[in-house]
Amino acid sequence: MNTRFDVTKAPRWISTEAGQWAYASNPEWRHHADRAFGVAERRRLLDEAERLQRAAVADSISTDAA
Image (cartoon, rainbow, N blue to C red; front, side, top):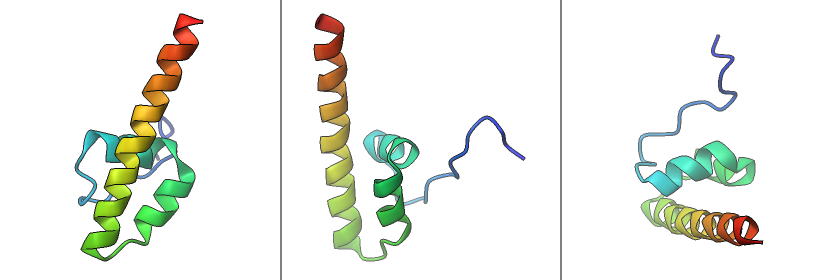
């Protein structure tokens, strides 16, 4: 049993860094990703992962600057 991480490995179609990050850190995104079968839906989710990751980085930078 892997006690270091409580998240299962992301599906193979999630190949981007942002997608891997979203799968590991966002339960709602992960829920949708686990149920995505269509190519268009998967592309939309990966695009959303990119936006989520950029927002998280921006939040982190603004928090560090404050």
